[in-house]
Length: 471
RNA sequence: GGCGCGGUAGCCAAGUGGUAAGGCAGAGGUCUGCAAAACCUUUAUUCACCGGUUCGAAUCCGGUCCGCGCCUCCA
Image 1: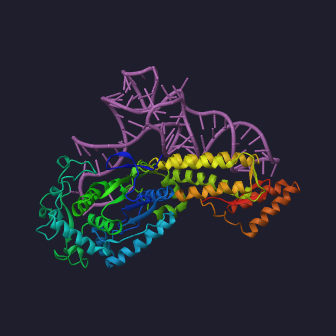
Image 2: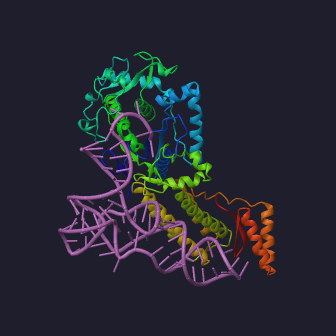
Image 3: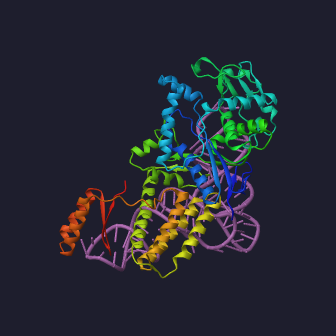
């Protein structure tokens, strides 16, 4: 089966056929850099990372763009409160964002354009929209997109404008618009903006939110591209507005495949500061969980299902990864032995990879893909137990793990277990001597000693082995 | 009110017409001086509930209950 995705536009599973064979052009809505991103944000970024890795695994050359929204109401407000210039204020959160991406092993996109770096492109696009009568200058000198000029409006979100709860959050300045549903392309400067302003044909001001994604995607990916993703909350109005702007300005289809990932919940509740269940990545790391473990948790549920984050889930992740790590250690040890392969592991590996791939190709069914991995782990463990697998054929298993990990990014196939310090190894040896002398009381005592220092001792046919206690 | 998603073992989670993947946790066993790891067996006669369609339904249809999301700037 070729690669398939659930396309929000059609609400159906569709085969992925890129505009240009072998290439995938991907736009992913990035963070607004007014604060540290929270784990809900990272669920989306992990999903997008999984998507780009899946595309690459399936043979596509990926060009991904992720925008950084560094000018909007929240960044301006934050900068004012912090008493910092806007760029200095957002800089710290941009840096933090990239550090967090590293923590979660998220592969970098090809482009990270910032809104403040693309103002001319946005202004040009707004000019085109005005020329084409899709936008107008309001009495307040702001520029608005006219939804009435774009009959297809609502195609993505499938919202009927007549049935929308109009007026719930109308702001005081909205009288300037022809229709309440029209949205701002350019916001005229006002006092609250302070020093933040750019010159434009319509006077000083700043861009609206939606226009940046239209301008940046066009700049790096062209007027039409393959994939656009984001959280479901961006489906409307943000993505709907992007389509309207881009298609009205360019006269061609904007995006072929829209993928949206569902929300992350925390302990069954929506994450919110007032509930006390609001976590940034840094909060969770501070509680002792590694980026690798958190990544595993965030990968655990299909992207279109709500994911309920819990610390119980983190514990599960730690245990599951321990099984993988122990497996890697066994493989490494087996690889050092003389070659043995009495069961023909190659066929088993081929089957495992096919199963893994089939899962991914089915709208990134990672649960199915992981089942393929764990079934392989069990079968290979069985072979290792029976002494049927060693040497090069064992190394071939590790090689497959390496391949699968180009998608998963959590297996750490080549990361050797933490080398034990000399005194730990000395204790292990002392215990081994005690065992040989049948001094089991001393042997057990040493095991406890090691445990207290965070090291687990395991006896194998090749001698004792120490491993670091997880967490 | 409109649009939409979901309820599968103690927990997490696949499966969307052919007789319940996988992970964690638990129990028993093999191995071990003892452990750990690994392996084996076991843990849902059943998929929120009630009807219906069908040779056959967790999967399709109707209804009920419960949880959640979106409906103008929150991934």
